[in-house]
Image (cartoon, rainbow, N blue to C red):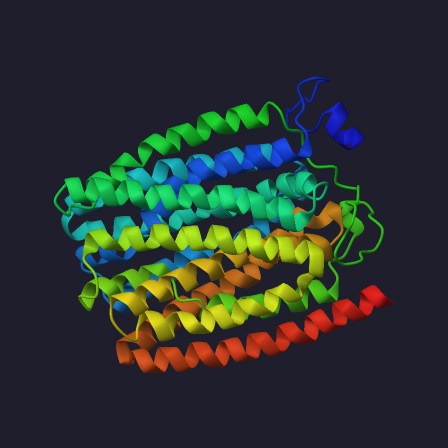
Length: 421
């Protein structure tokens, strides 16, 4: 561990000898927190489409609300990321963000009881839950990357994502079980998510007591991509290749249809019953865990070229999901989950490798903001295109991912040239 970790951090965190965790234990500790938290918000996201539809939303409204939620989760990191690096209040921001999610999700259970106001309240709570993600993610990612860099960024983030996805698998199953017992009513399933929300906060307290703030100026060993020497956070610029990579990933995010719209389609078109939607989402989270582990291992061994698989996965989603019966739809949902797994793990490993350690939280914030712009544009466009025809949505996604793949190949070629130089 670094001297910073051995001596203690900021934000009121001490790491007294004998109390601090090894890097792998830190990775696993954050993974267990994410497991519980994912039960909460992924359990809720698995039924956003059917919930909003039951409140009177159209496909365009579902696309806008879920797209705006993803945009809030990403765009606002442009503020929370630099704030974390500037203030060093990594833990305060992490705890605040998790608390907001743990509160907003169970409150969605009351929206079917609010009559005409239910749709507006549900939209506000969905966006607020995503705001919690925006607040905590750059700070938490910086804490996690500091430990993961010492065991291999690809492996460390892949293991964390796999644990994260266990919760993302269990949450929808919990919701599905409760909804089935409630004869199809969604609100009891959402109310049940208050339990893992409370567990999340308790686990977070335990992890906070054992982990200090990141060693901002220390570069990890075995970087996949060369970086300039670390300097004080306020004087280090983010490299141009990072910005180009963020732009390419924004195209990927814009093309990745939200599960809210997928769930809306599956129920409206009669492809599956409402209670089956969270089960499909759980399966997608399992696929995401496997994709995160596999691509993370390949990343550490072969480098960032493994990311070229992402645009192909995203382009296949609407072809499968909107093009046939239950079997094709299930395959499309699994591919969607795999794409999400790669986005949330191996993509983040390259972000950490492209920037100085002192600027990681800022970089994650900027990266997420660029992705957020893609999510907002993509969510709104996907709803409108779907209402016009599923075929037009398929074509639009294919074109966007062809552009993303072309840009990504060019960026990775430049990175390889820089490494050889």
